Image (cartoon, rainbow, N blue to C red; front, side, top):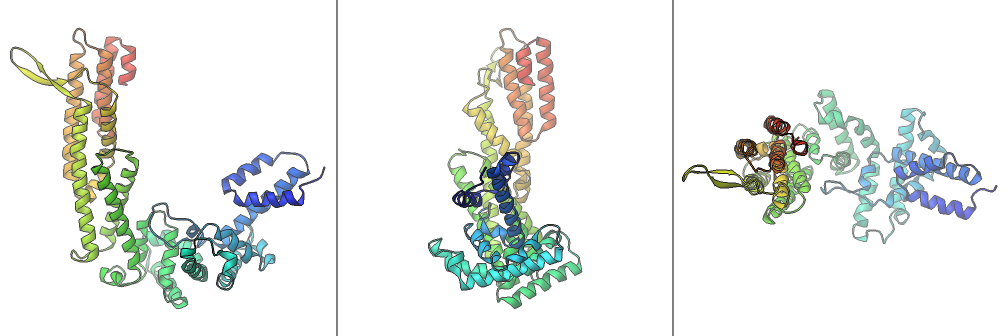
Length: 454
């Protein structure tokens, strides 16, 4: 039986080049046990493609994250994904005899030497033959600057490669020798390019999923880098500007969400709030901002805006619970009346869903409330809700024993109250409410009600 034709092989190679790593692995597993020459050719081509990608990932490891945009949306140096395979194809073709030395099992130091050599060759190709790497029609508005950034990043890749294993150390508590190594590396980069120090941090920044952690590296690049006066007039201050702009954009989104009546998915709201709190907390421990400086003013305004936003959130959350689990005035004896749970209120519906979303948001704002100075408002709301919801549940438990009471629906309302308590992290109160409801359901023999309450 004949194998794949030349045309089929070319088509398959083009297809495999477009596949993700996960897809390649899946296809490889699918054809692993297939018989015949064609299947054998496919397995060989798959193995070659996967080996080629492992080599490419090793060679371009320092700048690999720069071929995709940051998930958090913070501006950063990046290149089109289409440039990466083109760059690798041309650079790896210069000295193909060196490629096997990149494979696992080879000497680690030797692999690094070969990788750095290919990166230097790639930098020359970017400068001398840019059309092979970055076609004129691909993002033409950023092409010229992108080619320059790519070439310089490749120039610095040998130093960045040495830095990658040390990132975790620099983010924690580096000792004197480790700090000296970082600062020497920054100095070496500055000697290669005028803005080499900034570009090294840019490369390291691309490896940080949490953007705010770059502040820890920034403030350790020199003995003066932890002073705002030094950072604000240096190129390194650009990273602080990006973070503050990121906070401002997210604060605007939070404000817009509130202005829209708190409608829509709360997941992005939770992410934005947590991100802002994370940045503010890190700024507090890494930099001492002058109150009247541009950065100090930006931080203060963001804090005040978010604090007001959170206070309004807490007020709205309390009102949402009142709408979801309303109280009505009932007559007790004579002219005496009191507020009691409305047993006709639905256990599900728009009001219940709104309260559910806001309770969930209140529950995850503990850290943010402390950071933005709204902890007192949050604690007041939590205390009020615990008292309100536990009293609500107790009153229903008392009323469901009355003649004609709908026990099943009453226990469903109690279950809603308990769920709200869980969302605001009042777990002890929630357990107490559920335990009492379960006992009441068991005593009444209402199996269906018991399952709902539990």
